[in-house]
Image (tube, rainbow, N blue to C red; front, top):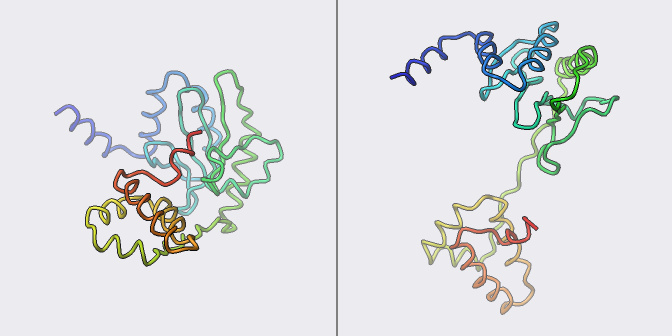
Length: 210
């Protein structure tokens, strides 16, 4: 009953009140979050809450957000790839995965330069107003070689397991089998892959954590 009450209470709160509550619950990052919020409040951005974090939007477009972590807190720029980053503050938290998002990290001992933060936010606002946005490139459909198609049609368990794999893992198997030059090699690769597919693992998983 208490959880239900708290959920209803949260749902009835304004976004501003939700951000108040988010910051009030903080221990380690309260002061820095308040400082960053004060900078955002000098701009025309709308304060909202998305995925439980304070988020700032312009005409419905996400411009920036604040997030707390165990060892640091971060200021996120959703189209940060377009920022000039003259002061070299931004990082790509997931190289090769994250395309547009950029993060400015603050650790416990770091001081926040409000004027510098405002400079970055204003540039992000200008970019959003200009419509600068990194478009998602649609992923190519997985081309399944004939020998694998036939195996999937004959073995329902194999088909179910294959369909449960991520598109990336499906592509790895399809390309590995399809690139075989000889029929015998193609068959050998299929047999090897069938066992791994049924285990629910990717072809190259064992190398990815090395």
